[in-house]
Length: 153
Image (tube, rainbow, N blue to C red; front, top):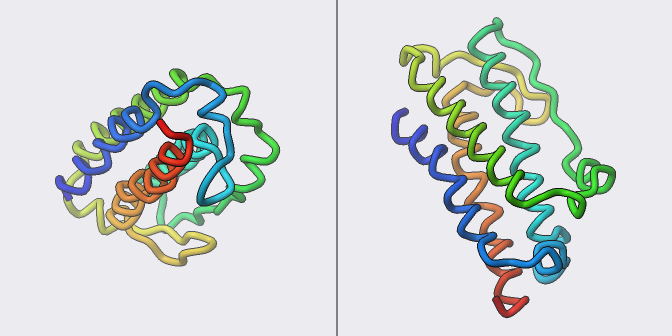
């Protein structure tokens, strides 16, 4: 459990490094695998993380809460990431992960077995949700790094 939290907490540094040195034009260019730009990937990770923090807290606070999925493509389509500031995105992502990791470390080990019902995944434990989001950054960094290569940076 402490390894999962540490891995979860390491995500912002990886994302920050992957976005380092890019211009706004490079961040917002849709190129290479996947449909999203590097900025859209970063904003998606922030959106997703904010939702996951709320889900984690509900799992601990409530009895078997319903965890509603959201349409990530609608967020990208209707909440334009091109208007985002990468420094704010990265800082907010890091602050949320730091807050959540510190909070998770205060929980007794049995709290990680608590469950919620996700509308797409079904029954999930708190530990499973932490692990899913610990791996979420690495999943998207594959696309980001390929986009950087395609941009020649």
